[in-house]
Image (tube, rainbow, N blue to C red; front, top):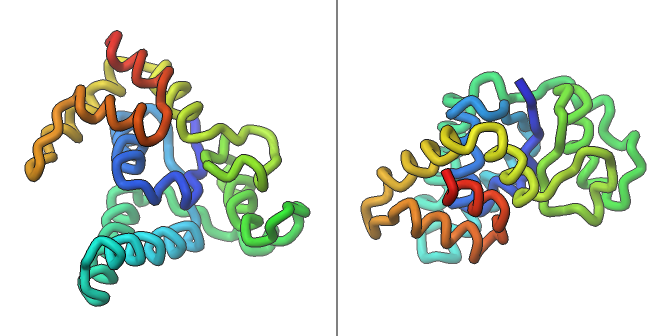
Length: 183
């Protein structure tokens, strides 16, 4: 199965994360990440929740729970042993080296990121490109993933069309959404 390292910046936006991970649940690809990526996600998620009014303890707990759920549900996504490669790729931002190192050790077919400027290595699609490629594998299964997400939304409810509209508005998933609408 095709594997892809999901960079923190792709996992941080909640709706995008939910859809991309739901594609993995449907078996459209296998997600990969390192402990460093999940630590960045936990920190960023807690910060986002605090900005939205959560207390420090609640934000920390909810962010920790998110990462814990990701680890539990995708128990084969964790890439280990990448640390020895960190710093060997000569990237413009040394803080991005861990992402490429995880991709190499995890034998990933792609690194999915929004940081296309600093991660100038082969096989680095944006989240929108990755979504389009992933949906094209099996649009019906991808639509099933979005439908499952819509069933979880209660307050406020969000139908499939609402989710697709938001994916275009927030993340410019034009091609992926077109395929999903056609499915």
